[in-house]
Length: 176
View (cartoon, rainbow, N blue to C red):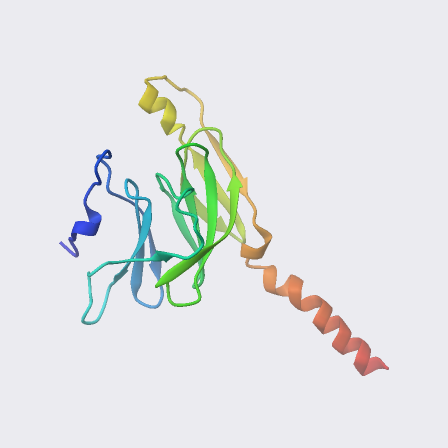
């Protein structure tokens, strides 16, 4: 067993614990707690290996971070999270302190019934609609969808878009 901690345990009213996992290249995991609605940082190396800490939510977004499921690390400072009850969102977070804390950047109402897995391909993110709410109400479902979620500021091409005016201005100065 790599790590066990009471932060991982199911919370009162929910039988589901951890759901959603991403590896950060600086040597830690980012883990969502489905029932608790919070993000944890779990070091994979060093003295604190396996000891989780709860990431502080600076953005007051915990009202939306309910039943989080899929997560996708966009780059070292950006993370997307799917979230469910009362509306289906993809939440965009950023951190400037190694995921000790996080701030909400944007929330997008995206799905029609419970988004789950989330993946990034060239700055476009895809989310699976699981319609998990139907499962909980006993409604049988035979069709499911994959949707695109595009947040320009979280695109891998974003730097080029913002740098282009600066490059053009520099070229014009050289020509004059």
